[in-house]
Length: 513
Image (cartoon, rainbow, N blue to C red; front, side):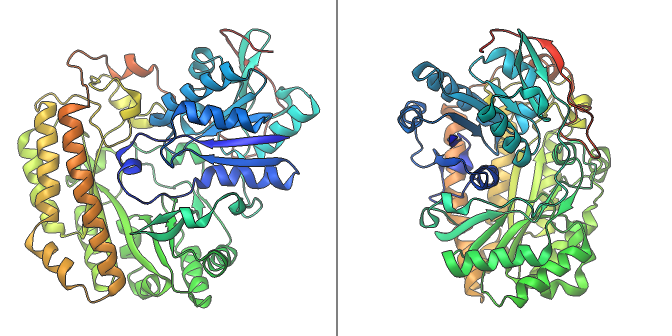
């Protein structure tokens, strides 16, 4: 079959401001098995431009494909764009069947199929095997209810099949690197770059994060095979920077050390950046030299908050003392640290923001990232804050970079003022500026200067957006009224053997044969 996979343009600031773009790893992972099955697959990365929905529609229709696959890593905020694309494509060519996947439709499949008749099928959970089976079924004309991990319409009703089992062997499916022009993708200051993934999932029970629920359990690739693929991408395609999509690639001390040793053995000069936990850095203090030797230049550490009580409440499992140790250890081993902090875990007052500023200064990180609590229905946090008021009704701004929840004691304008003030003070403190000017390592100097250039542009863009573009409401619904009931117990995938496919139904809207 002829399949076009579209990466919709994202409205998030992080996608719009930098001159760099990273390839859509998730869509390339879907494409690999489909190509190996003999299908003709094209990738349309609409982030470039970015392309308008009308331009995307013209490209899809002119391709004269059988299937359109839509998905995005930022699926909640990208959903309205995906809906617009599906609507225009269906209007232009009703023959094309439209398949939709991602975290948001995995959990919101009932509402998505009910509200948007243009979507024919939703792939729930990991898509590699499910998409293979789905496309084979469509090509053969066999019933879709024989394929696990789907939601669709059948006889006037919205139906779902049992969850697909998790992929045990992440090396069994290849990435379709041949679909991209590596020259078009860069990061870290115009260096050729791609996104890679060593592991999926996270073993930690943080209530605000959906990684544990969506991926079901932590799994990893073979360390040596993964290192060999990175080396191949570097030697054959000139990739310099590898951005890890993992939530927590360091979960297994043994497997992570094997990977570090394997990449060192490859003898390549690359840059590795990603996310981890502060306690994993402290755990690995005895072999952090391997981190730097392997090419790791920066780890983002989700510290989330500077208040021990809040950390306990959201089941983060960390502590402020561990956070400080991790930052210090990374600096002593020649790596940059980025500390994230999240606004909105409690009904903050002005004094809380002052305390955050003082503690972040005492942490002394190289970089910081400010995020806003964004309650998704599939997280335990949703249940705890379902009564909170929503002030941002535009789903495109549910991207962690816009305040979406009201705070009882501090109005939105003052929350924003505090966030921007904290960012400015922490990043312009004398220690930080001195390091920026005196880094001896040329790679770290390049990385930090690029970060400051991008940070300055994003900072002013966000200020402009808050003042002139971001419409907020003072009379919004509660979180539960805005989204509906909690989906915390909804299974995206199955841990063990899967039950025989059987349809679960919900009354549907319009049905397309």
